[in-house]
Image (cartoon, rainbow, N blue to C red; front, top):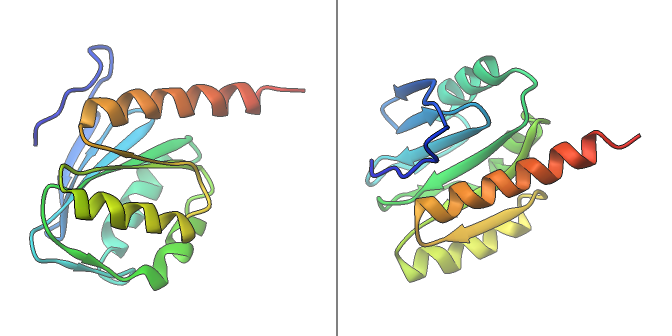
Length: 141
């Protein structure tokens, strides 16, 4: 995976679950699903459980790096998002215009801030901004 992460950001773990590869950073998770995969809540349970255990209550941004072509069952979106109360935002990275258009439709299913980007570095910058906003909002009396 081509990653351009901020220099101070430490990769904490990397896992390949077959359906996808995931890179775990302190406050964001980068996922790249396998070519041709049909992603459902059921076949994504193993990485979901791992991420929940890994992050605990830590606020996180999920960055979906859509280099490959795959399909998703949107019916389970809300359930998956509800499993992560600490999930504060969702970034979608794709160089494919059609996939970026589809990504905008996902806003109907995910009631969290969503950003759609061409490059990973843009998504990382956005994630940092969203995390800063969340921290400022959470620390208000």
